[in-house]
Image 1 (cartoon, rainbow, N blue to C red):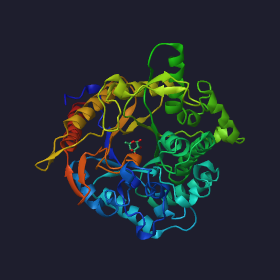
Image 2 (image 1 turned 135 degrees about the horizontal axis):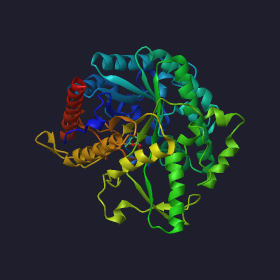
Image 3 (image 1 turned 60 degrees about the vertical axis):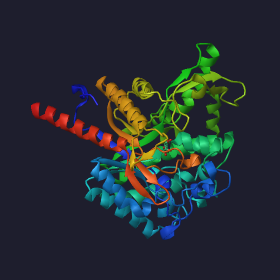
Image 4 (image 1 turned 90 degrees about the horizontal axis):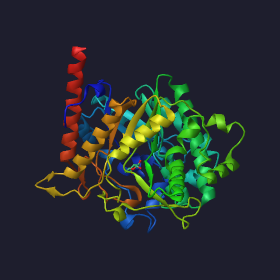
Length: 458
Ligand code: FCB
């Protein structure tokens, strides 16, 4: 990597790596853990790629010391992971499971002893199944259930955890889980979708407020998936279709939290959200987060389509545009992350942005015990350069986390898309750091050295 420009070297930039409980932990019923919607969904036939599940996954529940050792050896200073709700409260509410709390005690303590800062996501899609049976995210009582969970977790770890993220990508778990039915819990339809959107929006803000009350010095964020949306042509129909998709993908969850309400003007179907709103909700949806986590992987090219209900828009698949893609079928387009940072900056003037996920799945080959994953290294290099370019232009970007540490269970796609900086042999759980992992480590050290040099001069 080229020298870092003076504009980006402030020494406080947070480099890290991100994971999630369900994708890595395994041990799905160990130590009195209750079932989550993902445990149930992925063990149903026909729901995931080759019927794979995360019953064992990376066995992170038992192997976390080895994985933290890798993070330590690579000198990656920040580690983002999530807490599995049904380990802490096996029934979602009510009786607290001491053994579940103990696990995250061990994990957090081990992080701190290894000089790694924990960044904890409270909800990364693994709702306790007992709550799904009561309606899950479609039931407004989720605000009380979620508050109970947040209070137990924050109260327990506030002496050691400063950095919190309330919810991971609400658009994805409501859209894929409650509208399309391709993620857990596998529900479909507009009513399920809209009710879960509104309840997630309330939980997002309520979670922030609870953390603030319990821990005034906490650094509180939440994370959004986002992709720049381009119209396939400059016809008015395609432009309007792209605006609807943009409202859904990039505006729906952040705008109510900033006090702007739902973006109904560009996508009128969203005005049906009103049905689920109660007096006072406009205010309840607002919270002043210390940072906004943005997660970007690609861009979307959109055209008008009558065959897609409600949205009347369709993606022009990258395969049809003759561009290079990852194993997820997502276009490799590094400028996307720059564009989306600029878009969020220009629209909302956010005070603090962190890229809490970015990364790529490629078909890694193990040769002589080595994974020479040039494609991933290139992907990361170009995306980091684009981020630092945005930072140099004055966008308040203060951190970047790679998705992800180890190859893991990629939801409905199973184990086939490998995103890790570390290869996992799922037959014997052996880990091998890929070339991209060593490269990322070097990049962080280089940044740090140059920042120190600059600080000394200042
Ligand atoms: C994001 C999810 C994360 C992972 C990556 C590839 O949408 O937050 O869990 O699946 O995509």
